[in-house]
Length: 71
Image 1 (tube, one colour):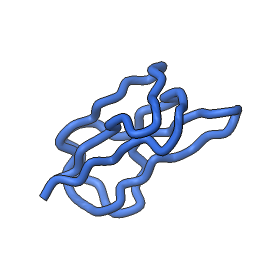
Image 2: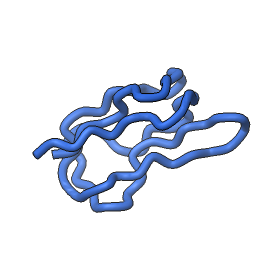
Image 3: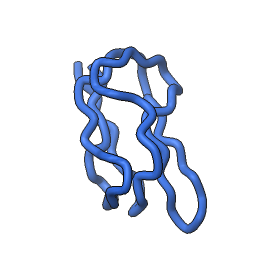
């Protein structure tokens, strides 16, 4: 079953750590967001394979935007 990882706040995509096709474990960092000069890691909530990465470095995400899909 696919798991969607969504943004919890408005932020800039500072760094993309994972790529589509990567295997990840629960707690692995997928993306690092930046908001109000704070770095916020977006973590995999379960293990699996990154099926889709929906953001690129430098983009702005809104609350609820899709960041990644893990299968």
